[in-house]
Image (cartoon, rainbow, N blue to C red; front, side, top):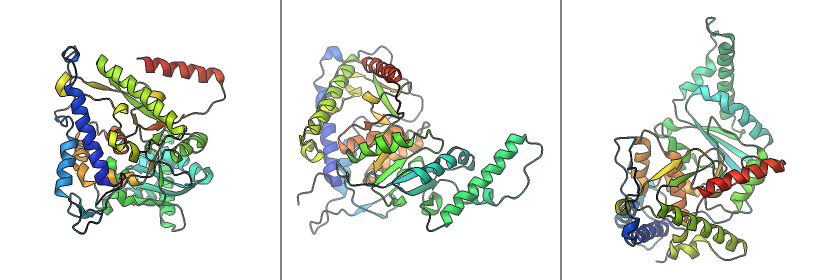
Length: 405
């Protein structure tokens, strides 16, 4: 039975092939390019690092333990960590140009954050075209909302006036949010994670149990930042329609390569990505189906920690639009098909690592996973739209300086 390239088994095999390709690149590195770093890696946690290339053997084991059904059907009999049946995942299409609506997902766990997102949320619901569904993922007990909304006690007179007003406003926000949720005709609904068998987990906003109605999902953190309608809809949503099989966003970060070998390889990868995008614009077929046999090697930079001692650093000082490796969640677009992959049983170890690590690296983990699933880097769009030529020139110079580092 020949499976299409977007079927989960084909996708997993593509990642396995990429791991093997990476091992081949590492084995071919000359001796004079090994162990060139003077500063050894300094861990910030006692949690052991995941094994280099470990996703390859992990996916191989999953494929062996979960064969295709005996009747030749392309649907697997998947089971999650609790033993429940899990659906077969498929990558989304490379473009979704006819999509005109999207779902907004925000996650929160405390009523104190209502001050941050309720006003921007109201503006989005009233003025942003195409927003037909809003899902608030609530990671605390329902009572944290209801008790705040139902509290009629006067704020303590010992509090400052500003704090008393803030407490009253918080109650009003909680009441308004619950009213929207209880109104079956309103586009907003609250997903109470604990009532759906989930724990308080940063990855809940990507859980397939949310069942968004729209293919396009727009994410914002509950404390922002919240970008403008022009940036998100006129620019970001349109970019996503043309690249619906990758993560699209406006809040990029990158990984700093420490060795010269990785810097040179990374620069070559950026150039290859630019050429691929330009070729695609000229009508050359560069879809994952066509490229899967090559595993997209030119756009990936092998890190060979075991062979060379190489390390990388998470660069949280700048937002390099033209050299982005990962995207922070706020202001991103994602196809709903990726939710199935993010919570797939095959990646249970990865999810456990995220919630166990003291930095809870859900943002870079999800973004990196999506890139490896799709075989493509994330796409970025500007967070701000300005008519100032001087400001545009200054930003361009700063971005080019960062690219040269």
